[in-house]
Image: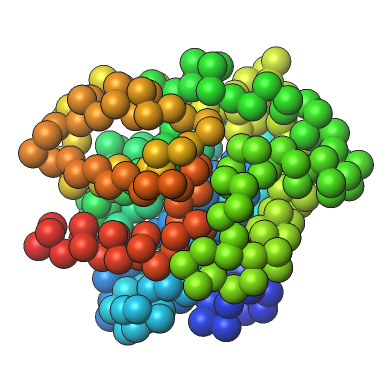
Amino acid sequence: MITIWDATFYDSVRVFRVTTPRLSTVYRHSGRDWQDAESIFFIHGSLASGRWWEPVLAAFDELMPATYACYAPDLRSHGDADPLPVQGIESLTADCLSVMDAIGLKKAHIVGWSLGAGPAMQLAFDHPNRCLSLSLVSALPPFGTRGIYLPPDREALGKAVRNGNFEEVTRIIKATLLKVGRFPLDFSPPGNALFYYLLQSAMQMENYPGDEEHQEGASSAMRFFNMADRCAGITVPVLNIHGDADPLISNKLYAETRGMWPAENYQEVIFKGSSHSPMVEQPRRFAVTLDEFFTTIY
């Protein structure tokens, strides 16, 4: 069952609620209908929701109207999705497939940001017939975080969210997901309004960071994720996008993961001056970068 859900920052983006056998959630859509358009399926990161893709969805609609059909769902326990426990990356991957099935997407370009790179990679590895390409954005490494690259103040953030402490959540999100002073960028709508709209995603989370002792929650899923041995055998084209000022994942780590992918099937684009969220900080450049990548596939 799919019904309209009207709550977006951009006029060109619409929100629909969708109920699958696995969960009830919402997805954002811009561009053409899937039946007659090349589709892009965006997967967001932790402490976020599909809202974080809206600047890019709007950019696609503005710069390449009637070219792509763009979809960005809320993952479980994030945004307006059911607050179901995250039980490994596999639970997110299965949810994404169920949303694609409910929408009717047989194939799409898969784009995964941060935590969302985990289910994006698993979709490409396990379901290549559903993937036109794989784009990784400020990505969770193929070998997981190993517990090293996680925010050290997860419990404090969870408490701040539960207590409605907007000021503390703002401080932590600014320190981890967005570079200070990057708003407004690339002719984005007024920075403060957009930032607080995005920040609502974190305030919506009901079970962050989750029961890490029993391996539940987004942080635990990233820690135990490991598909490094499968990278060399990937069968779809891969694009890696990241900023050179990412406070969470170092340039050294990006260099380490670069050699894990087959060179003939791999491209990398570095956004100078961008932090962990290049699609928010430079949405128009981001949309053009994806479009250029897609056109090299055919």
